[in-house]
Length: 447
Image (cartoon, rainbow, N blue to C red):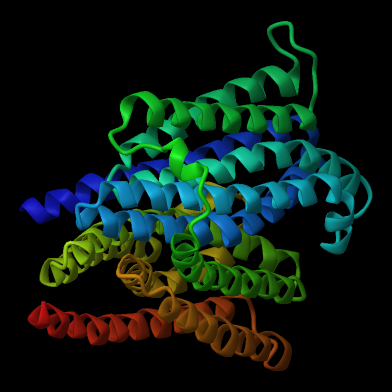
């Protein structure tokens, strides 16, 4: 029971954090949509998708994963100073990368959106939105690294509190700035950009205050002043495959969307709504993956390999179990779930079929996310990347092209393809985790 409670203690706040970030995105979109309609929603959504995809590849699923892994291993080994040094070196690397990304997004916003296919008013408003939010994105990326250090120590409550603060500020300022309430000037789409940027800056300030005055795990100036190549190289070696895994998946997803657009607006709408509903089921997987990375990393650092494996399987059991419950909902009440988002009967019927097929992939997705998290905690980010690369580019894209352009089947078969992808992904990750964790026994025997 002690191990279960440890897993839940880390995983549940992480799940809550994901829910809050999704909620702020939904509310933000609703505010913008009610103010400016399709043009406003398209401008904000398109720009945000680009910003967060780039930030995730390089920082949130790149450098942050390297920081979490090394902090967790050093914490498990009882080497607090080294854990703090890894966080500091991660902040140096991440700060430089974040500054470069923010500069490019801010200065070349119009060119980036043109390259992505934006036109007319979407290009005009989207580029203005991106210029402002690029500032907030810089602080958001720093927050990601600071949060990753806390997660490495097993603290997921503070990142949850940060997400609460960001939610409150974003939603409050959206209401005031977009519509011009409480004496503020009506700013429309730009009000959303200012609200988002202010929220992320505030979240960063809160984290810095927490680290300075309330955390036992600290950012030390002496470690920020030094450039330690050994520490940096370890973070980068973990970050590159992890970031490339995110890139492989996200780019393949964007290619898939371009394929689906060829089927028609009905298919695209049904696919979008199904994806939105399914994204809710990602949250337990992500939360328990965070717990898996932290606890496995700590146990590996302590050379306690047996318990490292047990923590991974406990996290997998609970996370996959919750996602299996989502599968049951997708199978039993798909039409009710689709109706939340749209009223057109044809879209409801098509989306319901897509959602029923999506139910197949949920447990395999959970296995993949959580055990990949465990492998990252053990310092192996290459295997999840290789598996994702194969499943995304050698299975998903070719099969989707075949289904859409050769067989000319409807969008339901696109979800059959993604189910095949996740069955492969989850099964292969499970195999490699079992294989690699067996080697831990050999290591433990030699300790």
